[in-house]
Amino acid sequence: VQLQASGGGLVQPGGSLRLSCAASGSILSINVMSWYRQAPGHAREFVAAITSIGTPNYADFVQGRFAITRDNARNTMYLQMNSLQLEDTAVYYCHADLWTDSGEYDMDHWGEGTQVTVSS
Image 1 (cartoon, rainbow, N blue to C red):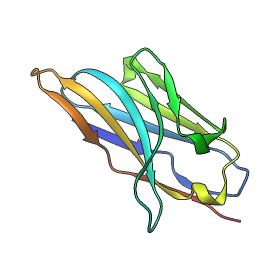
Image 2: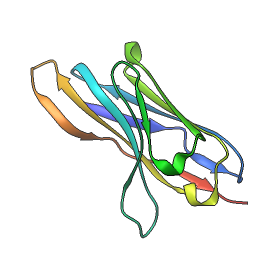
Image 3: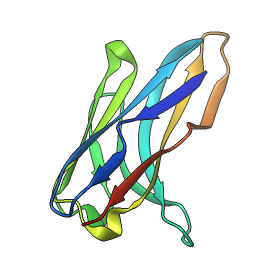
Image 4: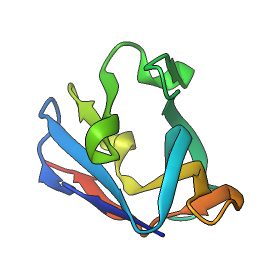
């Protein structure tokens, strides 16, 4: 099973980016999909999560700027990030807890990150 994050890049303050996280491999079902981020010198922190039925949850610092969605048919999650600020600069990681089609439960599956840099 792989989680592939993409969509990061360099953006000016106030700009927008849309991140994607595509899950592939021997997946039966995915429960919660989440985004975390880690800035240099800081611990990894929760950004947003979405359940299998589309219920979102956000970190307080998001303050209405980000929107998490998912496409269950494509096993893909998205994070629309608007009004980006300098402090949003970080590597963004996707996470999922899922069932494989061999019947194994993986509660802590991480993907490689995608770099988001907000700079003028």
